[in-house]
Length: 362
Image (cartoon, rainbow, N blue to C red; front, side, top):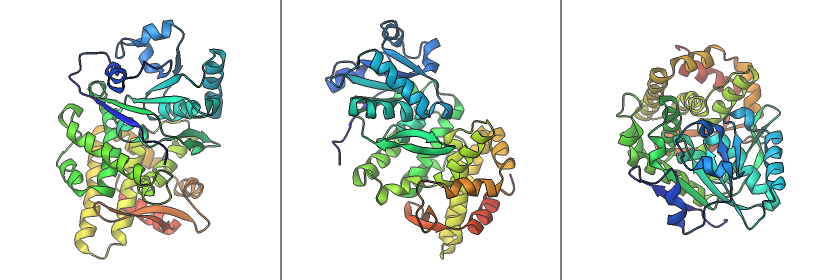
């Protein structure tokens, strides 16, 4: 296990600029170089970033799967090289999941690695993508095929940043929180399922911390994904296939929404294999809960993804999933709320049956 990151939580009440309390809390100098979601180039959400940009120390990176390429990483590496960045300096990556994926990958391989700050600006990144050291890019149409597991040195969650998120961005993070609860924490799931629709982030800070703690705990137990950490892939086999299929149509399907649609399939598949009728009902009810959240916030995304779905094309993407082995497609199955098994063989027929159970009425 590599040294654990230092986790820093900044309360929403902080009077300093976004993330600025982090350097003081960590007793560190501010980072030398910044890879930043270009969303922040033209607004005042991070007030100090313009000054750093004026000093030539910011690489603006467009969020989205189209930036998760080897070519974009090469551009970042060239920028660091041209600016004479060195191993005694640090790089902060500021953005959501796709920006963190590409930016932290570049920082992990530049001169074999420099000090890294992971500064997530979305709920999804704060509870999932920004924790655990996974980074990388897509390749030949397949999700996250090239990358490393390299822990950042610092991970900073600034709760004030989450207050400005759009509803769809909160939903994306809520889906990853849902995944964490379903695989590992029945009490968290019980709290979350009480909400008819997605709550404002300012009302659920405790739930956000609980969800992030689950990810930290699983990563610390199994950093390189030889066992328990694989449960974090719940819903992602189908979710990643949906994202890849959307990209092949030049469409963007947000990651959390794709995972939510994938979890619905996985929950029906899990229920099919549960012997206890009570557990079956709990799992199917969870799928219905996810469907309600998705359709209330982003009905158009759900309808587009489901209606465009070609199950044979999706299965072709699923068969290329990097979690598979010589035995076939490996999926995560729930045996109960909060209990997950990994390396469970999923067949094409079971996928089709449970896709129809989950999405046939959409």
